[in-house]
Image (cartoon, rainbow, N blue to C red; front, side):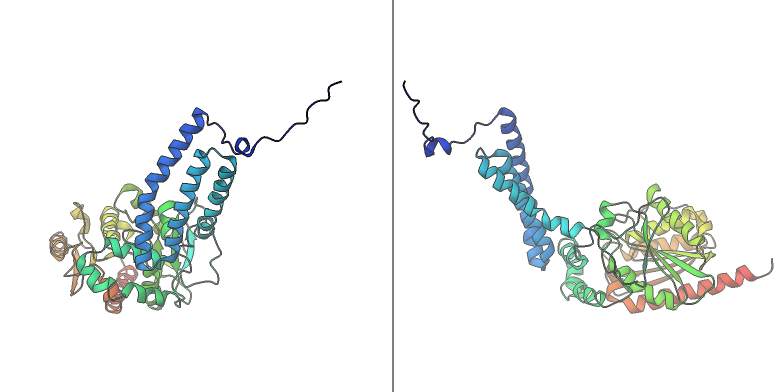
Length: 387
């Protein structure tokens, strides 16, 4: 009998031969490759800017994004199985950093400003708090400042100095809510209570464009609570308050404060900075019965108001005379029209730009507290007077 010939292993060239690609795989590979190419330009630009301002976490995220996108393209497009497996492993590895900075972490010991959530919203620590807020601000100041603002605030390092203070200030949160506000709707607001018992006046302060930065709580919480006020700091995305959804958020925070055992519901004031000032004036004039007065910093209305609702209402306006975003002429024009409508207006101008609250922080906060105290005392006297 003829014995069967022994099987010989295929030559190395045959073993290394790539697998044929199906049309579906070719299409998928092309799509992923196109997506990786499209993502590369903004990621490289953002990585360059992050390196320039000294933002290591953002730089690492950009590099991880580049690695993840191109390894996904290789995994989808490569013909050799070994190369696809290596690319898939690299893709999974590149996602470890984004997962780490987005995992919620405990806030740590209690701070002066406590996190609160409106009814019907989920609570918990911020998902994106692992990205240092100082890096976000540094990047934003590089690309979003006017020349005057850059020379007066960014270049002298005022943002950097501020975040050095934040690191050791118990009034400031430990983790940032800024990206969380952009990407998650959680009904969040910060709440700071003064010492003691009994009902006291309260202030709702609306943040400006780009989100609820540490600056607000670190600047306002201690002076206002020491003056005997409850402070509420609502979170609302990019700070677009002057619309029905933003107005509803303000109303919900007012309702939560009015029901709080430490708050006098008849003496709740509204305030805001920049775009928050626009939102404050919008809400104040559309529901004047909710508020005892309104204070705005570096802001003026961007549209017509129901001027008749300003009659007899208390307004405090402060702005930098060199402000290139909310110009002093616009603020003065609004003050004039509000007085003509019967409002009781106090107008303060400073030699400052749009970042007046940062460059003249102590001066502005003292003036705001003085006005609030005077208005709260007057309101208390009016409310207790026999009718």
